[in-house]
Image (tube, rainbow, N blue to C red; front, side, top):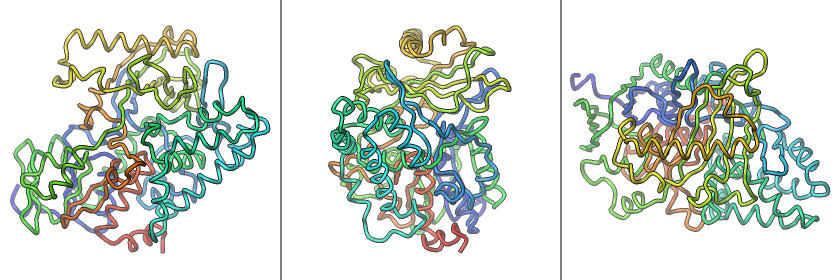
Length: 503
């Protein structure tokens, strides 16, 4: 490449959802965009893999707020995804089902319907359920970009500094019937695998915004989340942007007003703006000279990451398992906040069947996820996929059988319906996404000290930005809003929001 050919307005490291969305938004504004991806396949947590004729989702299994007029639909309509990605609306009577050994509880779509369905399970406790939904709505209103509005003041900061667990616990203690108190706490926070919930650290705004999004409307991608990647790639290239695969960033240099980004295959790329869509700690490792203050670098590299997951990807025999239009979260007991522990693992899991169903209503495939500590696999952290040895393979199979034992307590005979099984560990996740310790959601936020764990899209280095799940919030809606924040810092947030709203 010549010096002119490799000079851009914006270089983006990483082609996960955040990186791709930034690529589309900035390319739509006429900027020359270049995305660099370490893998031979774009998508990051959106990417799929193919086994036995099935495309499996790796990190995105469902998303919320996609009905017309809702936040994600607004953003995706402008980006061009709303009409180009095949998706299926999940069961309005229970998009998530929270299961225990003695009973199951549906989480329904729509505020009133959510209250009505859980009130059937907890007679006499309508006041608590109404208060819960009112609180979620108030929190959502405080986060301006969830309402497609410019930030005004810092009303959201009050929720970043509150404990999610304390909120759920205090609310549950208001139950009229004391026998319901523990179970209400466990049901309302029973899908906290979505936000890697920690009772010691999780801020209230994370589960509030995520749950509000899904209660508004919940959707599955049909045929895998890879269709989102394909659509975004097409839009980037149609707008003149470039995506370079097998181009792992190995160095980031700065010679104002340009950044120089070097890749493992020997290429150099230059731009006035650089956006990191990879983990912030990994980004700092790539800097060829210090750009940030030592205190900032020490803070970012010292942050705790959320836990990882152990996953089973199953191809099912014909007519062996019914298609579920909801996700199923199972817990061995009511302590749903401490399941990523070595002792007693597994304590719970999420089971989802991938859309679409067969013509006669059966599942072709499913994914089973269980939170797990990285420490169980850390002895193999210096190895790579496919080269970890027989001991690792045997341990991985043993862990898989333990998880299947737990699943079969609820879904008897599941094993006999499995045609093929792929196993993923935290090390697999680390290898394919580059996320430290195979973390599911990147940096763990801490309500005890929000400024320390809050990564902003705009840095003090002119032209240097962050995007992805480590800023704003993880999940499809959170990362989409984060991409708007990042791009708004470059082209003007007021300008960009007006275009998104069609003004």
